[in-house]
Length: 380
Image: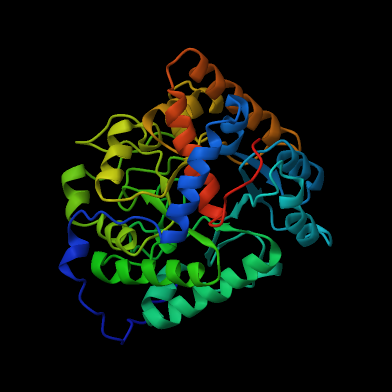
């Protein structure tokens, strides 16, 4: 691609509170919903709790799988494929009525812009993050995020697995060697932090939960964890650069954060998705929202000889709230993988490797994230 135009607008300096760890809670509505959910979830079965924290992957044409996932009480649904069947919107809008408590699901997809858009027929198209960062003001990026969010919300989506908060700046397509490239807003932690927050705020204004990824930052990593093991830059380096977009977005109350599947020299020899040290580092930054894994079918996880189900339990023990299996290889594969993950989590509670209280807390975060008015009269 040609050289990108440098943005001409002035970037406002980040206030000092965003440069240090902050204790930033969710909005009052979300805090109230989480309190109510925590009380309610104490009466749920362990199976129901486990289903709430597991995301079912499905092709956008798999209407039956979507309906089954909702009726069984799975808390999340991740759609792949760019096909838009004529009944997709109606199906997604109908899912809450199938859910046992008639609550909204975390219906998610990757809508980053550029070459990473799943349902352009529904949400339109817009530039890569790097192009946005080079050519648009933060106000324009926020407006674009709101437009994308309104289109997603109208179609029945409640969560966007975006924006990418990694610091990269290389004008290349993502590949096995570089997971970011054009997906990153740029190479400047300060400027990128404003862009990441702007896109997130736009989604929030539209009623869609933004998901920062991939903590603690994949920019400059040794490879793409989708294909095999990779490591980030050293933790000491990330703390002075790559964490800044996460810190600023957390201070603004971002809803979800996705962990990376890379190891972090100086912090953890495990993929961050499976690492208590990595999860604790994120919580220490003041984040109180939902922490989700990256795909647990990724090459970096397979290299540890772990199935998605085994990895799901390890992720929950580490402190993650929501677990993603990865792209389904067949219409039934996403649901069967999710069911195996549920079984592994339930077994972990039964053998006491995973405290039930930890599972309840995770389920409360997932449920309240997309149901800010949750306070059911009946129990599951």
